[in-house]
Amino acid sequence: MRRIWAEQALLPEGWAENVAVEISADGRIATVMTGADPGGQRLTTLLPAPANLHSHAFQRAMAGMTERRGVQSGDSFWTWRQLMFRFLDQVTPDHVEAIAAFVQMEMLEAGYATNVEFHYLHHQPGGAAYANIAEMSERIAAAAGQSGIGLTLLPVQYQFGGCDGRPLGPGQVRFGTTPDTYTKLLDHAGRALHALPADTALGVAPHSLRAVAPGTLADIAGLTEGPVHMHLAEQIAEVAEVQAHLGTRPVEWLIGNVAVDPRWCLIHCTQMRPHETEALAKTGAVAGLCPITEASLGDGIFDGVRWQAAGGAFGIGSDSNIRISLSEELRSLEYSQRLRDQSRATLATPKRSTGRVLFDAVTQGGAQAAGRASGAIQPGLWADLMALDGTAVDLDGRRGDDTLDTYIFAGDDRMVTDVWAAGRHLVQSGRHIGHDRITAAYRAAMIDLRGRI
Ligand code: ZN
Image: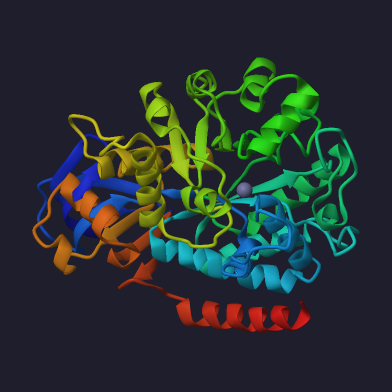
């Protein structure tokens, strides 16, 4: 049993002082005591560490390479996607493992305890399966073995090049699965996870209404008891394509045709009308928001104010991994609402500050979307924890919600000193315990990759 003690901690019932937390050998929180004497590792502020609910690890390797304007008028999401497809012609399993371990290390250093990996890079260049159909899933699992992060792996079903059922384009063939090959891949990916700790989870991810047969969504959801994630209503062009083929907008279609429940996490939802926002929120599904990536791609602004008023759950993910920053995702989400509504503290309530509302939502919503018994400092849950730097000048003397507001709006991830994932103490003094080794492997992989493209 390990004991940590904090001057203040955010518990399910609110802020508490002089909090001792005992972590059992299996990585769960054993006891939580308030008003306790100092003992064990001493901290200033202890928080539950959220899950990063949406990531495509390999895209990290393209960060900073997609900021030029193309020859066509108007650079858009679609030209970004073309570059991704070119890049994909060269990525090997060794690259993927090195990139994923680096991404997971960055997530941990930012304060995330869990990587929910929406994993669709399955096959060899040209589209043939590897000898082991789940080779790439095994590499993501091996990366988690290196970084120690909590992993929820979501192998992706990606069958078509568009709503009309057209075949995959040349840039998409490495993703391709049929219902049969997907079932096999999922089975093998599940076995690859057996080597990882008990907090690891498996779920499914139909890529989008464009890439799977919409009529098969219920079957795909039935393949595991884990979470079900899907991209939904991200871009105007996607909404138009779905409307042309299915007769309704994407969210309208999903709610009208599929039993969406709290196992579901819909990624982006940046293109919803008010009635869609309200109806989807009431299903109990999590909105998987990726504010930095959505800004980078020009997707649009999620209607967080209406979603919250309807009681909707949400969490955040780093998606393209152009920048992995927990504090910046939360700040970007709130600032997008302010800029749209010309308002301030849009998500705050009379009792909870903006930072507190954001943090409570993403710890709970992230755990739900990860299918992980986590999201609070509470006995029985996995010890997913993060600590903030008590010596940071801006945090000096801050208490309660002011601590979170300062960290999110005036600070950044450098304030994160310690992170535990299911009790594994992976970030200490602001650095991952394998930082140098994982960074060196990533640097070598990137030098090799750059030489090929
Ligand atoms: Zn995505």
